[in-house]
Image 1: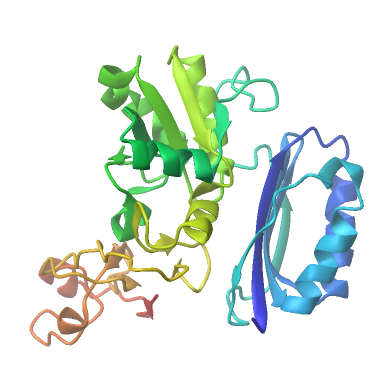
Image 2: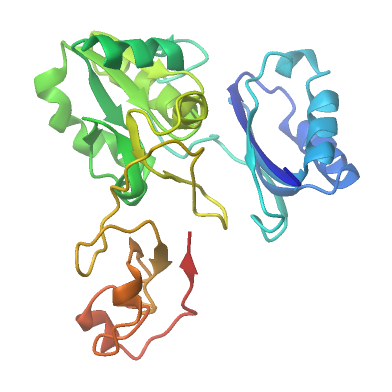
Amino acid sequence: MKYQVLLFYKYITIENPKELKEYSLELCKKYNLTGRVIISEEGINYTLEGLTEDTENFVKEFIKDERFADTHIKRSEGFGKSFPGLSIKIRPEIVGTKFPKEVDPRVKSGKHITAEELHDWYKNGDDFVVVDMRNSYEYAGGHFRGSEDLGMSASRELPKVIDKLENVKDKKIITVCTGGIKCEKMSAYLMYKGFKDVNQLSGGIHTYMEKYPGEDFLGTLYTYDERLSMHFGGDREIVGKCKRCGNKTEKYQNCTNANCNMLFLICDDCMSDEEVGAGFCSEKCSQSKARVVNRVRG
């Protein structure tokens, strides 16, 4: 791979976030990396891209810090323009949930289940419930076989939709998300709300797809960068459906109506539909005079 994307996080007490921010900025500039970094007193969340050699040199230096020596670094192919630049911010949380302070993954969260263990669960037909903790538009492009979509558009909405899981409160649950960061916080919340057997997929969907491409996880994995989606090959099934006609697709775009700007899946035929107009999620949106730059992505 000429370019590589690094994805990693860790819930760990950061006593001086500002100091870590300055060090991260220095290290990213040294290796010409772009991406997004969030640092908080509760931990770190990094997504970075650069030349493969540069990203590997970054990792070698970064994990010299004993706090991060055991961090699970996930790698995938980039194309050199996954991010417009470098953003490093200090925030109250590394995932914006606004959950009660008692919900703290550093203290208590769901049991970590490896990709191999989940694969065995599927293979053996175990009785378990996969709860997808991502947003619904991410779920639409790809998801685990038999998983539950809670209908969220942001992580902070979990308390509003948790009633949907009331009927499985006493069953074996495994929370999943892109890289593990969301499902770790969400599993902690489920335990806080009295769920009995809570597990989380260690390393997230990314790790599972890497080990078992085309198996159990159907479709593509949504990414928060200009790639928009990714996969690791395998005989995968396309599960994404065009919002306008229902045909299978893996292309995302933002609605051209500035008052909508919804990210949705669209097929090639509907993209060229002159009656509704390319770039709109519906005929109603095409009537709006408010416009944003139309981008077909993925």
